[in-house]
Image (cartoon, rainbow, N blue to C red):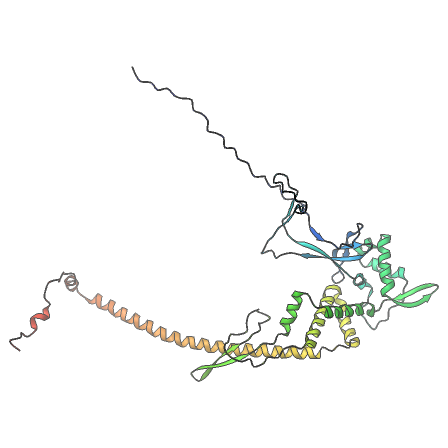
Length: 403
């Protein structure tokens, strides 16, 4: 009787039960942004669009009826180093433990911060100023000035439609414009360059007293840094003395040391005085304010007005910067001379190495020619095992008796 096997019913494998990680939500098409706003701003503060004072392009500003206008500045890392930001409630103060299943948090993919800093609304009155300083403007009423300001930009016209915002700029005009008398019971005011240029000058002086931010302070120190040039006489090569040049400062254009040197005293160790440092800070502050908040058409007018009305002379600063530039040019020239001598020395060493390589190549070619000239019989004889055999020269040695 054939043997039969009984199949057992296969049991399904146990299901693997694991807690699946929570799925991330899809990216928000309109992600939130992180703002740092002034604490004194009221709840009626709004973000408005106004023409930029220097470029006339529409930009966003924070307007508060109580505290004024604020400039919004983006602070972000470069695109080469992407970062993100996590916003979550702080439970450390209450002593609560974080709930892993339901947590109220928000991840900002682009970790940029928008900071609101106070801005002088006087810069927005730039369209009212003429680039011709000799032309004496006519006196106008406050309503006429406000109407001209509204006609300068569509965004400004929309901003001035609100009564509170219009009153805000009228107060700025009433404060900063120069009075031109009273005609028919109406007060007239005149727009003069002094109304805009003098506040810029005062702001630059205040920045000089308080000091520049860290990044601009480093830039100012780099401008005034005097290179320390060191010259070392070394071995002469064919009548040309080789010199090593050392410079402590760096090249402004390339950002690298001007040259390399060791063990030598500096030829020039002049350091900028505090007066020169303050003049450079004052010039940087003026350049920053004019480039960022003054239209380009008013730059020549402002420079002409500054030369006529400023008691500060930049002659010591210009003299020091010319001295620094002269030292840097000398350092570049000495570095070029040192590099040329180093290249000449390396070329001589390369010639010697080339001769050695040519000699090795010649010996190798002679060996190959000698091997090719050998006959087949000679090659076969070289393959013979001569171990234990006497050499042919041993048969031609004189015996001891013969000696």
